[in-house]
Image 1 (cartoon, helix red, strand yellow):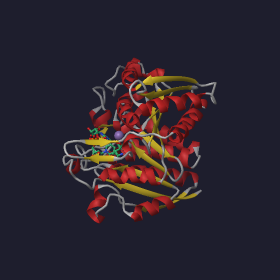
Image 2: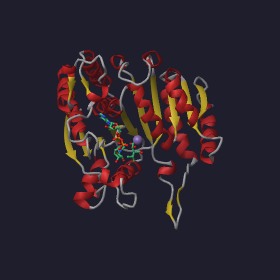
Image 3: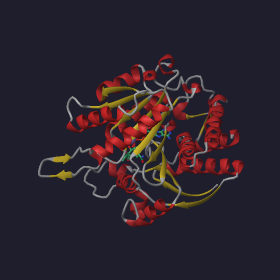
Image 4: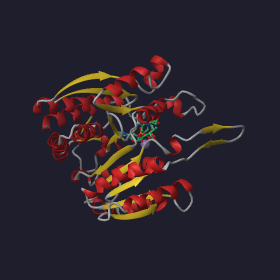
Length: 354
Ligand code: NAD
Ligand code: IPM
Ligand code: MN
């Protein structure tokens, strides 16, 4: 197999972690006889500095022409603290998701047993958890009209039937090959968009009678997720709810640095950790590269349909953790201090275990 990969490192820890995602992609390629031609694109704060816009046309064109995209993170503290900034790093990410039609963001909560004690939750509550989130990614309050008036502002929360239908179908298809359980999360007791959401899910559910469908309000779901995460199999939810719920769910896996994701839909697949640019640890060789590395496993599996290659990556991560190696975010009181590694050493360990 020969593929064109666009790497978009972005800001903060983005470049630090994509370095290792890319290295793993190549290493697996060299073992299984796959070759890649790499290109790089600017997005986020680095793109604003260089071109004045967070998603230059050149990056978008390269993205559309590539077979898969490996993305790091965007964001800069300067904008976080300046609500009045009109040009913002995150706009580039939202635009590329929309332009590529990446309406389904798959966020697996993959729990490595070795990290049961890294979580702030009790190991017996966590053990056996395996959740696949389907976060709708190109609709909702993220993309509705934004207004700033004199003393007020608004963001329009809007969903069309077709947008709910297509993410629902993807989630049900996944449920069919997993535990045949689907939980749809909304706020249908208050929001009109959620009432449309629930209606559409109820309709799509009829095509999948084997799947047990549950509807849950977002506030309850946020609580159930930490009370009894094992009860969930596939979760499907709207853009904003999915954003928040999956950061919460990262604590099941031990850290934000563990959660990978795949954004798919109409065009080129986009593979990205769920975390951000992490200003607090950027440039210090502290970032956990495993979310980026596990995003490459998703790339092999979803973009290229190569399950064995994907498994080789998750196995290598598992072996690295079993051998006791940790980055700071997943270390616990039992971790041998000598095995707490920086980004670079952790990335190298995974390569060794591959
Ligand atoms: P964040 O995800 O960057 O960081 C949250 C916390 O998790 C921080 O304490 C950070 O140190 C930790 N963390 C995140 N990734 C880690 C890793 N790989 N290893 C170890 N620890 C890790 O969220 P935030 O602080 O709310 O946002 C920072 C910036 O990132 C903001 O500008 C925000 O807009 C942006 N952001 C971008 C994305 C993205 O590009 N997909 C996602 C979320 C946030
Ligand atoms: C994510 C991020 C983005 C989102 C931001 C940076 C636009 O939090 O990828 O989860 O909200 O989708
Ligand atoms: Mn997020």
